[in-house]
Every structure is written in C-alpha cells, then in structure tokens.
Length: 87
Image 1 (cartoon, rainbow, N blue to C red):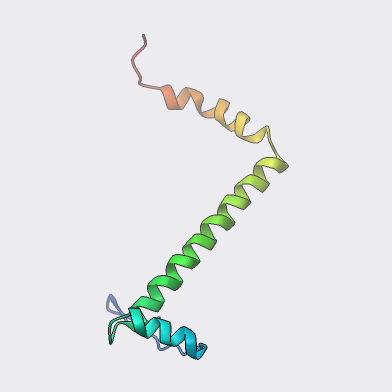
Image 2 (tube, helix red, strand yellow):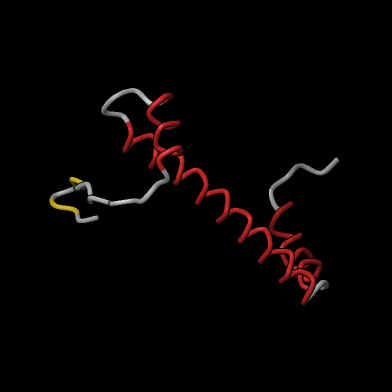
C-alpha cells in the first residue's frame, strides 16, 4: 500500500476461487462487502499463523538455551522488585 499525507490507499488484488466457494461466499456476504469480508478472513488467518510462528520460535529458543531465561530473570530480579514496599 502507498501512503500520501497519512492517507492509506487501497491496492487491487485478484484472486481465483472455485465456483462453489464463490457461491458460498455470495450466499453469506452482503453485496458490495465481499472485499472487506475476504480481507478480514485472510488477515485473521495470517495473524493466527504469525502467532503460531512466534510461539514456535520462542519454544525453539528456550529449548536451545533452557538456562537463559533463568539467568535473565536473576539479572532483572532486583530491578523488578525495586521500589516495592518490604513486608
């Protein structure tokens, strides 16, 4: 997308679909709302995939260096409780 003075421009996108898939969409999506519906669905799916990729990356990083988080936690412990009242 291109931006001009803070305004986001739409970009045209062509997709291919089987006739039965298109018929299903037409049966549930109001007229003139197809693009928004498809973009919302695609964005939701992409975010789900992205979250899973990040989750997998975190697990892989932890498995590669399991003591790292403990060491970092110890380093920041003093800062995280700094300023808290003592009981």
